[in-house]
Image 1 (tube, rainbow, N blue to C red):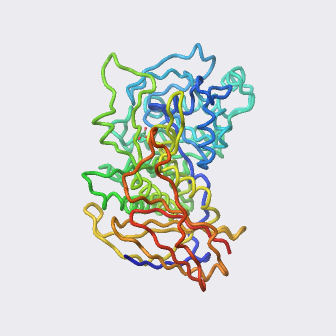
Image 2 (cartoon, rainbow, N blue to C red):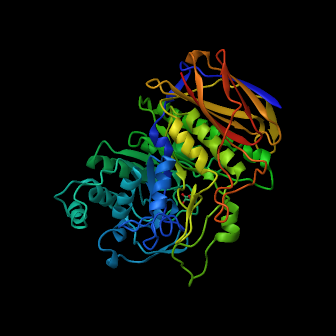
Image 3 (cartoon, helix red, strand yellow):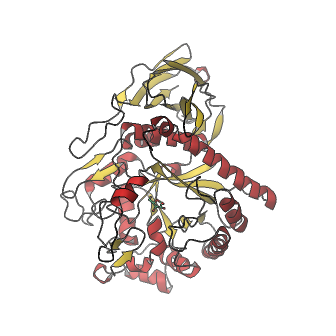
Length: 504
Ligand code: AHR
């Protein structure tokens, strides 16, 4: 058994939690759109062909903004293909995922679906194979009320009111050699700045995201952010971060400590952005849009999933359909803790992705939709983390890992909503074999009571939810949580993620 201590005090505020941190991502990739959110023949399909069971699960998940339409896909995408009469939309090669894009679902259909799931649209423009003019065209089509060629085209296509998209990504992963139109930091910085300036001539209130690094392991990491922000500092609001984690070579200890890497990634990007701020003598602060994060078994994609062949361009192939375990969900929950720990600077984030493709929601054509293990920490964190994120001053034992060296065995963050008095605590026990007893000083909350405590854990850390056994893994009430004399205690099983809801 290990022990740890922490304190919850509303005075230890890190920053307000922006609801955009609970965003997600839908890319035209694999079965995310077709046979995912959209399946006209499905028994639950609505008048637009969208699956009702998926809509219900997305709503319950509590997703704020959804990034669209890519990802790598966007760097070869011509947005004009995806609007207008469906029968006239061209089928195109999607070079990013070696598939055929039918364009049956495009901007209008996706916006209709977003209304149904109560989420905001976060749109990415193609700065890989296209440029400033096409971005301006898309902006005019989407956001100008009426009276110009493209706004009138939108109206003729059935949308009288503008889409009013506020948040825009200036390309995707432009630092990655795999990206169509991959550029140097200098070249990308110039086109991002030029495009951002032009877009802001249309609407100065747009919120713009410049591409940061595809991961902290990229050889250009750090320098990429410095150069890109040197070009774009005055023109954008966010620099993006992307990070995916997977268990490699059976090294569960290192995998369970993945959030240590995410913490370091966030700190480095903040430091780099603030360095550029200092050099420029600016009083503006650039925040982070962590617009791709998840557990992803990328090696499996390269070894098993990858589609190839000049005569093989399938529509919606089953690719990137990772099936997540309890251990994956614990790491996933810990990544959410990392995002909240820097709520002051991580003000937008997108879980990549949402349905079928490295997703918390899976579907079977004509069949059911079900929750993966990762669904549970996302849904509960999104529901409970309200108000401000609090630093918890955790005193945790440590253990050693192959990849990340010595790491804290526990990790935690708390949130507090001053208006309602609701407080939430999120905890992870990274130990593979030891329970953790955590003592939490909650005296500063007044007479706090435990409303609920839920834990995700299992004797089999590799247990998963599947089509055959969709409810194998779920949350369980943690009955060890209790408050006595201003002290909350809770016992956390090995390899577990927990959330405690407190009310003053
Ligand atoms: O989310 C899957 C892919 O991961 C995205 O298309 C790309 O941006 C990233 O490399």
